[in-house]
Length: 222
View 1 (cartoon, rainbow, N blue to C red):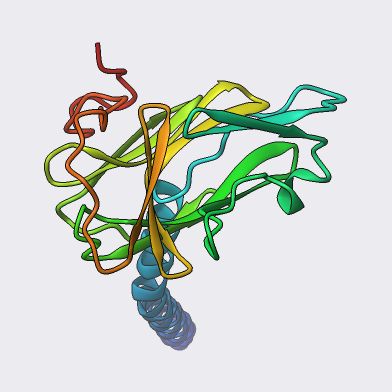
View 2: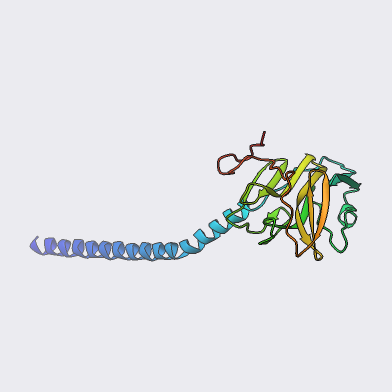
């Protein structure tokens, strides 16, 4: 009987040691897995931040109605209309060697591509294309809703406005640069200047939205 008890004790001890080794192994595997998970966190955080920045810098115009046959651009008080497939080659606005913007239809939306100045002295040249806006200076702000997009300078004066009267008709205002000239388009008029001259401080540069955008996101100015 004593021998049997000792054998049984040895067997139990062996089983317990095996269980302990198994628990230790499982813990080590879990630790390695956690380390691998943590090692990927910085890249995941970076990817998430980049995706969020990209989302915040993008604005999409309203979708065009089905079977849209005509799109229109109003610039400086003049309106040009054409079939969606032809608008990108014939917007009808050219100032010397400068075409201030390009309008085109993509993915059933009427986009505007343009280079514009960050202020009246054109301290920075900014760009919008495919709804994606280049990084704006900290002194600027932007605001938007489903039918309009705007960027303003440090005085809350607009430097770019895209206002969609309908999904197929956009009004474009702004301070545009290109081809060695500057084009001022506000208040239903356009004026051009040599690139060496600042843009005018005109009273017809009126913001479409209220600012700051952090407080008045999408709120139209009265």
